[in-house]
Image 1 (cartoon, rainbow, N blue to C red):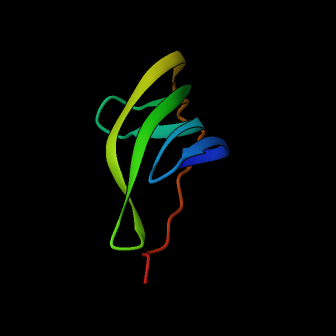
Image 2: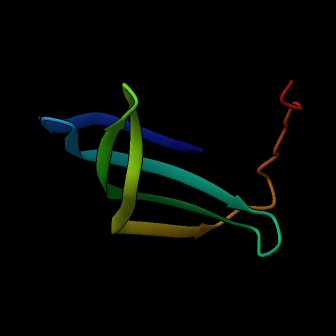
Length: 81
C-alpha cells in the first residue's frame, strides 16, 4: 500500500515544486515481515503544451518499522480488475 497525501505545491509560471507526504505498508511474504513507513516526496513539475508533467521526483525516508508476521496472521487478497 502506497498512499501520498497533503500536497504542498508552489507554482511559479510554467514550473512548480511539490512536497507530498507518503505512508506505506509492505508485506514481505518471503521473509514473513510487515514494513510500515513514511517519507517525503520532493517533485519538480513543468508545464508543456498546456499540460503539467513531472520533471523530477525523489524522496527522503523518515522512518520504517519492520516486524515479523505471527503464525496466526492470515492474508486474504482479491485480484485487481
